[in-house]
Length: 140
Image 1 (cartoon, one colour):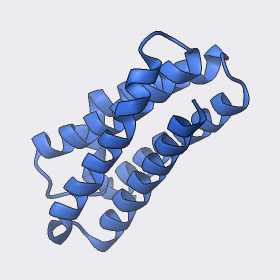
Image 2 (cartoon, one colour; image 1 turned 135 degrees about the vertical axis):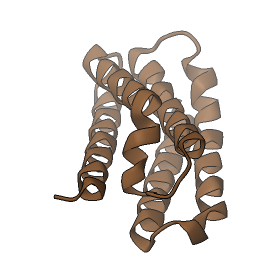
Image 3 (cartoon, one colour; image 1 turned 180 degrees about the horizontal axis):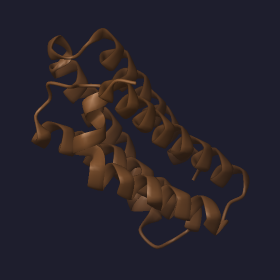
């Protein structure tokens, strides 16, 4: 397998694990297992986003990919706080749509530098994060 394919698979897998944990946390409020999974997903994006996002954007600079990982991590950590019902959960949840919109704006700004698959992946993931953030905001 090519390195790009492996990185794309890893990034998509981490994202899917995070989305499943968000859905589980909405079914079982106050459950700590989804919160810890979401924290792990958040730290994975924060620590290795600059590397694993090379699967979507091989020519991207490390700083841009780190910032994208930071935005992903921020959205997932907001859901971790909400799932665990920790203090600041409402504040972080209010900021989550802004982080998702920022990720979508960055994607649209660099769309000419992205491959078609990378653009679709970033837009899809950003849209899903935005929708889940807005829905969670209205439910809280």
